[in-house]
Length: 95
Ligand code: FES
Image 1 (cartoon, protein in one colour):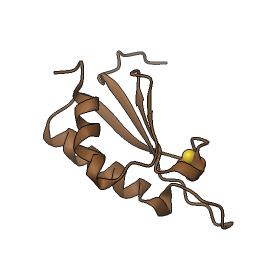
Image 2: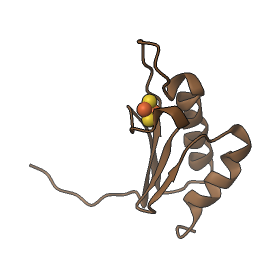
Image 3: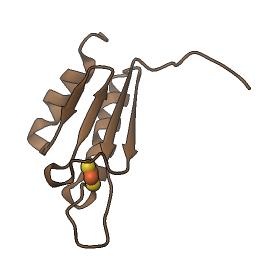
Image 4: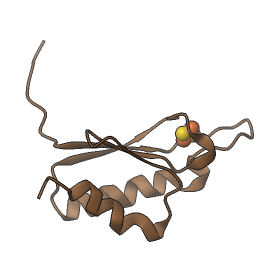
C-alpha cells in the first residue's frame, strides 16, 4: 500500500446520474454538462480542487445537485446563471 497526502483543498461532487426508469434524475437536468463547465472554470483558475461526477446523491427531484466538501455546502437546482457564484464559493478560503 502506498500513502500520500491529498493535493486538493476541496472536492466538488456533481451528480450526473441518469435513470432509465422514468424517474427524475440529475443527468437530464444538465448535471454532466455542469460538471464539465465547473471543471473547466476551476482548471482555468488553477484552483487546487477536484470536480467529479457522481451517481445519485439522494435529492433527485431538485437537480442538478452539487456538494462542496469540506465546506458543508449542498446546492440543488443550480442553473447556468449560478455558475459564477458557485465558482466563488469554491474559491472561498482557498485564494
Ligand atoms: S439523480 Fe442526482 S441526486 Fe439522485
